[in-house]
Length: 99
Image (cartoon, rainbow, N blue to C red; front, top):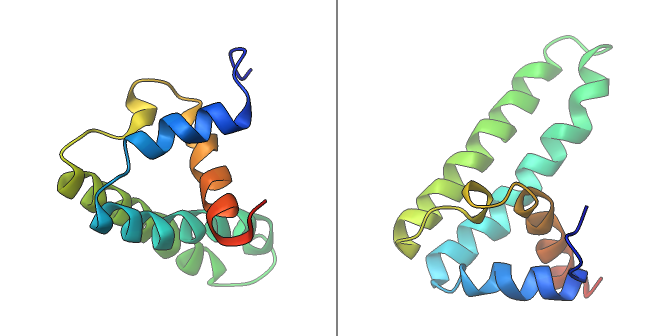
């Protein structure tokens, strides 16, 4: 699945396309918003109105991602390779937790 690259190689490539400070900031906020939204999906089946929160976080997170890329002047990396959808969360975890 990872195309013969290590996580560190994927993250290094990801970081090359995310150098602008505004893009880094919007990704630092937007990525966890999207992750939390995805984690809320099972709860939405049991809690009325939860889907609105999940949807708001998901859409808001993606809006932040695209705003950041407007400042960067480059399209998101996942337009080139879908696997970058998974690298963003790993980048965020490494940045904030060293994981």
